[in-house]
Image 1 (tube, rainbow, N blue to C red):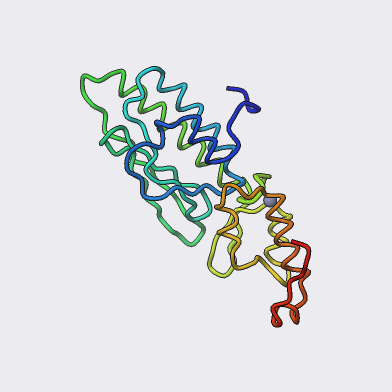
Image 2 (cartoon, helix red, strand yellow):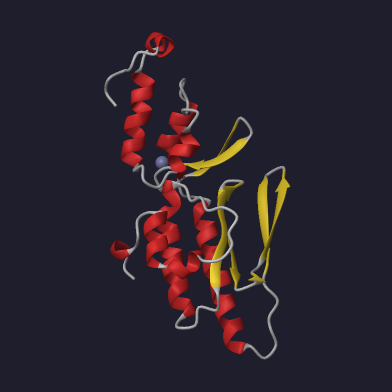
Length: 204
Ligand SMILES: [Zn+2]
């Protein structure tokens, strides 16, 4: 699938590959900037699986320690196990691949291919801005590590910083990044007094 045919939001990804979102899950959240990489991952997994989907589905998608965590299963088989080690110089993630099943060569081949796709996609999120997807690095602030491009890092460090509901906005698929910025800008421009008095800034 070419990049331009890829779904653009989590809702579109779900609609394109519904089987990947069937079954039990414990939370699906993909920040805006990582949605294109996740869409590519879902398409590549779809191709690697071929006709037999082996019950592949996502269990949990989230951000943790400055990179994505994409947890999945094949039917009732849990896939690889992730172990995060927090050291002084950052976080190391170890992945213990799923045990191979004797006599199931085709499944073993497919599950190894999926493991590789997921670990490559995860590695890319370590250098993709959460907000816009541009190249960035992990920045620690107030004890929270976020991957941000230089522009968004500057926003984070500016006097006003992020609005408190940034995470809600990032995780709401339907709000485009452009709209998010309009909202952030509107909140910043709104003078303190009018906030206190509950006066609407008027440019929503
Ligand atoms: Zn950015």
